[in-house]
Amino acid sequence: MHRKERINMSITINIYYKGVEGNARKFAEEMISSGIVDEIRKESGNLRYEYFFPMEDGETVLLIDSWANQEAIDIHHHSPMMPKIIELREKYDLHMTVERYTSESLPDKDRDYVKE
Image 1 (tube, rainbow, N blue to C red):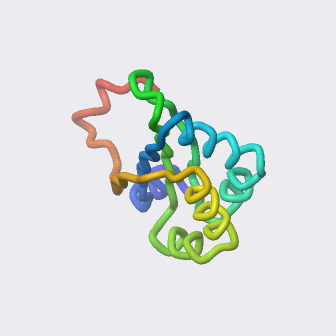
Image 2: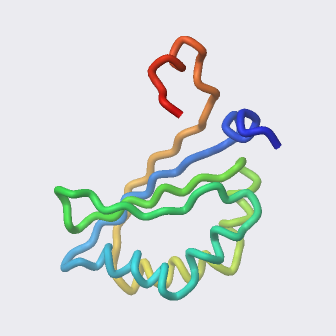
Image 3: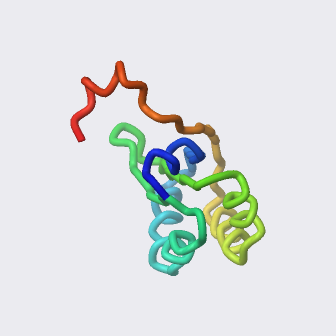
């Protein structure tokens, strides 16, 4: 599959996990240390699954979660990983804000501003 084709189909979901007393970061750390993140990254159609920590907000973690298409997301939502994620989310009493984006190819007029 060509990179351009993948970009045209991809869906990116930004999930902001918010907690107290460092719980969002503890959640992300346990997701990684338990192997759940590695398993999700191996799922068919997963393009990216990475956590980021906002510099000005120690109680929030951002997950950038990208998939090739909606079918891959649907399969992931019914995978054995979801109950584990939900269990950890409850363990750390996290609340979420979700943003969803679909990707498209970069227009030629914008390519001059991008260094690859």
